[in-house]
Length: 208
Image (cartoon, rainbow, N blue to C red; front, side):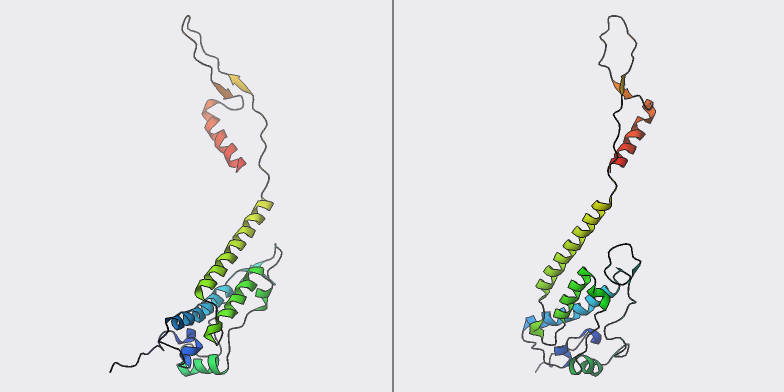
């Protein structure tokens, strides 16, 4: 007979409750997906801790930016390299989860991310978000955050430079008798021909 399938492998700190208490239904592939959602929620929590926020919360602009110190999930509750039984006690028996900092609640973006994190680490795997739904929600949040940043940048950008009309002077060409005179070309009265390309570059830069 083949040896029993051992699914209690990997980084123990990130193992889902059903792996720790050996109740995972290994005959269903969806069970593995749901354990991944739990593990991903812990990684997302770590990322959020290192996200820069204005001191004191989401802020209205102008405050000093800071991030929380890096911390592993369940740091302080288990050893640096915990045993399976240690993790089972904390996650399954005591049903502990990493703390959601209050400063996240003041940020529209991080408070929304925190809500998705909490939906993804339920003890009951059937109550967790699917990875597809989580991906869709996070993408929508990212688009919203980028749109808000673009709008903020546009509202604070200086108005485009207004250039006064530049008088154009005809270039005087020497007449050669009966030869047909070519069409006259122009140059600005503000700069000699050698400086015209640089003036154009400066004008374009100012318009941007």
